[in-house]
Length: 443
Image 1 (cartoon, rainbow, N blue to C red):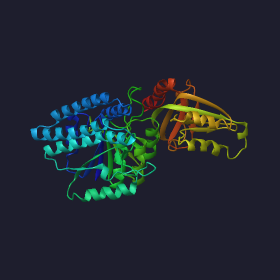
Image 2: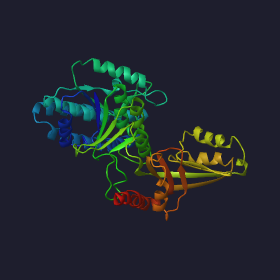
Image 3: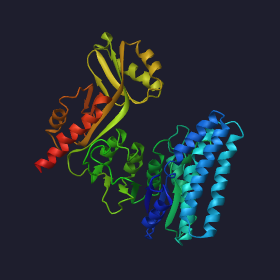
């Protein structure tokens, strides 16, 4: 059994849905996880925002516009009048459900129900298309087996037990379609896995089903060695270890959400990143094998805030760092990077929601300096395999870039550098020239 996830652009039109149907129709056992059609979730978020503001007339206009878009998809996707009629009736039910929220108080619970409609629509329309094509398949409702606990973490035991129960209802079936992103929470309410949720769904489902492989299909041919939006002539990386992929995903590689690596790693299930536009391309394979050593890729993460706490009391004082970390723990704010000296500690966060409160509490321990508009440049590879020369290449490439912080040694797979965001694009380009183009020239 394989698990295949297709993102929003992969099912973003009738044409793309037909291409996905061709890709999966080979008779081998698989569970196909679908995102909402591209643009849908953003439009549903916009609808929810207007409903919060009680702007019901504006909300209805947005709902009508999205409904019209889906009517057009139905017209293009199906060949028979019978299926077109069924599909139009189905989407009308979903949009009537969304419109019902204009009639009463709108809360976070209603918002989650609205946001779930994108995946429910894409999977239902896709299942109808498979039926029209005579392709044997079953639509598995993710809300029957996907669940998060009271800490908003996946309830893995529940997911595994209930997914198997759902699969056992359909002996002899090889093709299953289900929704990414959506789930139920500990109270049984409709909820979601937050950002990157469809990738996470695929990995959790793959782990629960003991899949032989998890495939993440997008519109890019694998994880690239640098940001293709900034740097010319980037290339896909053939092989990455789970740890290398997690570092790249966390520090800015948009093709894969960082949460989606862990369930696959725990079950040692290979993850392949593939391109629906170029299905024959090799893409990137993520597994317990690291492949060739040395520097593999560079990624950048924006929106970083650097905080420096300077205190004479830190000198030889045990418990100081614990006190500092407890401040961030109280506000549930993760720390990305940290460096220390005898009299100061510098660290970074990517969520400034409680920055004012955190700064106020930290001032009890010393002088606090805050720098916003920072970026973390993450250089990833197997630096144990290449025991010398990596640092020299990196710092030579960035010799004219002011470095705010450096983190090296906490992981064998990552060297992190904090810079001003205004220097990010120049840094990525210079790293590409100094590491990858030089390597290609030497080869």
